[in-house]
Amino acid sequence: MPPAFLLVGCVPAAPPPAPAAAEPAPPPPPVAPLSGQFQYQGEFRQGGLVTGTAPEGTAVLLLDGRPLAMAPDRRFIIGFGRDHGPAATLEARGADGSVLRRPLAIAPRRWDVQSLPTLPRGTTPTPEFLARRKGELAQIDAARAVQSATDGWRQRFQWPVTGRISGVFGSQRIYAGEPGAFHSGVDVARPTGTPVVAPADGVVILAAAAPFTLEGNLLMIDHGMGLNSAFLHLSRIDVKVGQRVSRGQLVGAIGATGRATGPHLHWSMKWQDERIDPAPLAGPMPAE
Image (cartoon, rainbow, N blue to C red; front, side, top):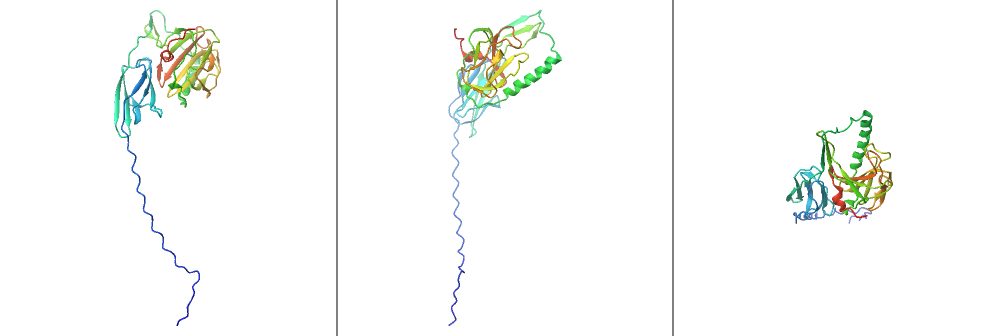
């Protein structure tokens, strides 16, 4: 009988385990089609601002073919400039390819236009003024390009100061047949030093370090979703760039800095590139 040998440490390798069967990928969740209709609050007219809600299932929102910002709860705003045409188109697109398109009729407004046939428009700007103005406009454009995370646009706006309305939005003068720029905001006449408050929550995007040639001490507040306020001719500014402000918070005081004939607050508002009328947003001027 052949001798027996004991092999130590030589255990045959176990065969590799069979690969586990791949789990089938779960089916993608069903894509919900658009459901419901647009809902609106506000004025579909020149100078107006509208707050709306898009239908459920809206993935993309368009205004006249251009993307329109929409909050997670499908809320949005649209502004119509002083000279906006009579129509616009709002469109919601669902992830499933469905489309809901709604035409918007924009009502015209009658503006206070004065003809001054014998009065020239004004003097020719000097090169020094134009050079300084270029830098000021660059600051304003840069401020308006800021997109802040604030929901002030959702609030009911209040008057930043109460008093006599001395200038209305949209008014214009025609000098010897040549149109001047229309008035871009609303003026409230009060004495120098009268407190000015934020009309809604927002973020300060410009606080002039020195008076601008036309606007004087200029303060701008971003209310979110492309909506911002500008306050002109202030005697002082009490807030800083980047600071968050709340509705009703003190932000400055009335003055007559810049090109102003007397102390007053000029309050103007823009939504994207459209100048809108602040007065309807704030409602009737409260009695003092």
